[in-house]
Amino acid sequence: MEKKKLIYLDRNENHYGPAPKCFKVLSKPNFNKLSSYSRDFSRGVKSRLSERLAKEFDIDESRVLLGYGGEDILKQVVHCHLSKGDKILIPAYSWWYYKAIAEEVEGIKVEYPLIKGDTTFYYDVDEMIRLVNTEKPKMVFVASPNNPTGNAIDLSELQRFLDSCTDSVVVVDEAYTVFANTDKTYVKALVGKYSNLLIIRTFSKYFALAGIRIGFALMGQNLARFSKFSARYLGYNRLSERIALAALDSPEYYEEMRLKMLADIDMFFNEFNKLQGFTAYKSLANFILVEIPSQIKVPLKNHLLSKGLVVKFMDEDNLQSHIRISIGTPEENQMLMEAVKEFVSN
Image (cartoon, rainbow, N blue to C red):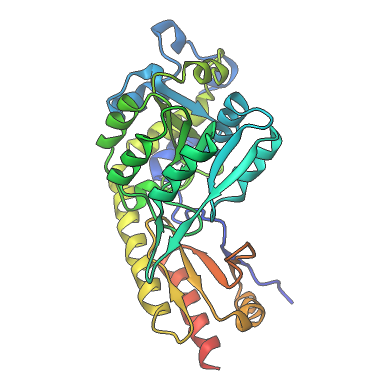
């Protein structure tokens, strides 16, 4: 019997795939670019990609950092600035990786709450400010949108919070931000005003290049130490660089994809909230969090697996009865929704 091919909607990967221009880069190999180091340093820049990103965000190229995905930059900034016994503020509901890298340097994790509303989660900025004043953290992580809750922090609220963080390095993880917010203009203003701020983005999610591992960050002027810590003196990966540039040259492809994904997020939100005992929360990312009746957790998981569908069944504090669904293609999303309805009806 042939084994059923699984559809993974649990990893927040982008099932639409990268733009066709990215594949053209791979179809026209330049062996010189594989066997020789970049010479971009001779022009006073780190790479063609950092140079392009500087133009995209209207920021000096020296303030752009490149990494092996966003996770690489997150790990580097923690290892650079956090020492044993230093405190780091982390969202109560957040990516497990934040806690893991803090533990690597024996930092002390202090969680700040997110408030669960009727249709979305909220950052409790007043409580975040109180914790900054009382705990005196060396570093703060803010994810916007946050994984797994899907909510983002309002720009004015983020600024209000940053005003209170004069002595902390603040890392804003924007891995998922472009799906619902294509604005870039605020980034220059933020890193220009807040000198201890690092904003991290990635090509993994929106640009569907998770397997290539391309991340970047934009930093405030007081993070020169981190800039040296993360420097790659022999240049960036030249193949990854060309693929990323091809993605940036394909705005029409990604905009069409983005609108389809937003429509399916709305579909999930509306359809799940029609089902008795289910609560879907609004999401500004490429996934959606759904609260389910606790007693159906195991049978629902088994039912979906029988259909070849894999979603993330949460098993964390305060998120024991929740599933996180990565937004797939329209066909995959409809298949999942129909499978859930079939389970509920039976």
